Image (cartoon, rainbow, N blue to C red; front, side):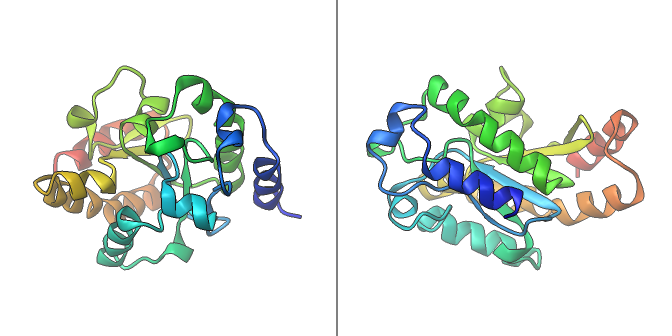
Length: 201
């Protein structure tokens, strides 16, 4: 059994927080086991809870469109969430719930070894950049511990605020260039300058 399958099995039996009492299905994540890009959203919604898969509702349809716009499909990336169970009524995930799922997320990142981790939304961003504002740092890549993190607005934001759709689309189009740059130089601290320059395009 691979590490990702083991994590998914452990997630399915997890009772570390109150979300385990109200979930229908756990949503550990899905996609390529050695993907260059890993997307991390916030929490499963109704459709994800029913199917046990991430981003299968309206926001997921938009994510599929975004992937297609840069020549990718789901099998080419890995998609997960900060928490693996749906919060009741789609409320925001609570700090203790995020903490309970932290070990699973960190192990997924370690197993996949992505070149770029794309955070989707403020809760995902806040996990790696506490105290930052999504409106300030979206679309700006930052290197940390050998991984390049790229914060974006959550696709659902475009459904609620149509004006953000173009912003998300433009930020998304930077991903191929980020990957190409990483193929030339590893995402260590000296790479920080290159990442910042890319964020200005």
